[in-house]
Every structure is written in structure tokens, then in C-alpha cells.
Image 1 (tube, rainbow, N blue to C red):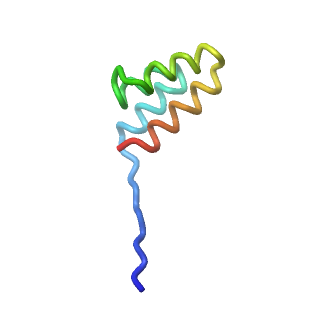
Image 2: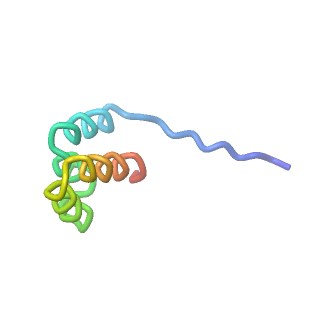
Image 3: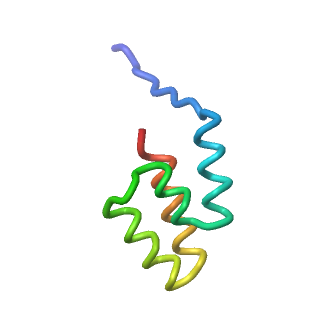
Length: 65
């Protein structure tokens, strides 16, 4: 049986988006997905608290390719 290993690479763009997300989470999400549903959801989460917005931003950057 053959085992498939998933390999993901971190690009300079990912690092750039994470840095912007730490400063202001919606900016990092905007650079990843544009003015979509996740951008507006991130603004709402950031207004409710910095940590939920930051977690959501990092999750979007890590999972979207």
C-alpha cells in the first residue's frame, strides 16, 4: 500500500500576510481572499475581540491556497 504525504510550503507571501494579520487581522485576510465573506466575517470578529479576529485570519491564510 502506497502512502501519500502532503507537503505544503510556506511562501514569502504567506509570511507577509501573517505579519499584516498580527498588526491588523482584516488586512491579512483581504490580501488572501479579497472582499469576500471571510473578509467581512473577520472584521466582525476583530470588532468583537482582537484574538478571535487574529485566529480567524491565521486560519484563513494557513488553509487557503
